Image (cartoon, rainbow, N blue to C red):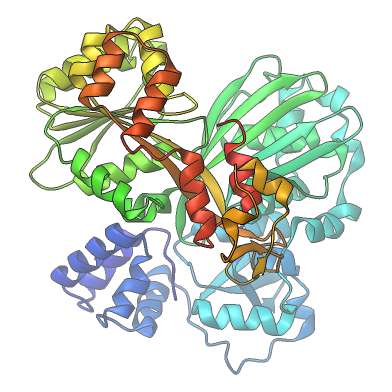
Length: 571
């Protein structure tokens, strides 16, 4: 099925051709916003238009031909013009060669960057034809086999094509022209493109490019754990860093100071933002890319992993007309995802929602989103004061970083607004102590704070290789259990398979600690009681800790004992 680069444009085109009505397009767009699915898939699934009609319209509009690959026999010399790694990564199939040019079948003809990248990497003219994704996938399996693409394969493909003399780091480091030439070398472009594509396909949240004295490492963070790939040649470190800087509009010649930038990509029909951070080190620049897959905005509050009782309470909390709800935890624990899920639940025609974020990570339709810019003095506190003049009903503050932001958030709550925000603490009770340490008066906390939700993300067992096992007594003790506690219960782990890249885990789910600010808790806050007393009182009133929540997920067969121990060891 076609996965278009500009889905709204496709819809408009089909309406103009009278293949669908405006009402059908609006219905499909609503479904796309709700589920995050590709518009073309939805139109076909709803029976509004056939896939063949969509392909014909796209081909005619772009001046291309359509092609059916089902019964087409493609000679081996044509197939070999594009390597299997490149063909699979870009989702194209070479079908013709004429006067030095190559014609490829592609299912995403509106994504012009595909043909541009191929022209650059292959150093020849590349033309496009339109085919269904199913046809292309079948042809890739037929002619290239069932093995998936990998950066390791690509390194072997291009190893003999690397012009080593061009990658002299000492000669190039101060020459902007030479640096740009390095960033434009076909092997560099090809390698970085496939590193990014493979990382996104593997659901990576971060990509690390790390220079050391004798080697250059690339690592992915998948489900919270770092995995190393076969390292690229050391002499490609500067060139790859320069290529990333070019894509993110950073100063290519500045290697002494940290820099931050952003890259926008469209991969497999999904809009993906990549936040770039560079850091000077002893052996070159360390570069970390944070992958922000915009399809996450389709996440509903029911999909966060909360247990039914916690979910019921949270639904009641976000329906309140005023007050403050804080989501807390370390970096990367899913706080932003939870806040977006809450906003999506609250986002109705009768409510005005405004967020202030640093930066705006995902676009939420129907929500006013403001990006913080400290360089021009637009900080959380100042932005909040102006937001109050915009007549909001619900406000999201990206993070409470200082006393000014905390006090302004309290003022927003006292004037009749519900405020959602985040804070970096290890658990829910510790948030109270952190706010008091900031300088917030206890009486302001007790009069505005409604609840604190602490969370972590734990890896979930791969359903394909899920296996019953009996854990050791040692690992059970790590989560405060004994062999007697699990007597008669079935526990699971993932033994590893191709689906989960032999890790035994596939995806993540949240474990939560919801602390409600009740009258007894308010009394302790007013007395400035220590965190341990707040935690004890909250537990007496039914608060389930993150470890307790993790153990329940373990007993439900969702995760393993080792994973609960890893994420809750210090709790």
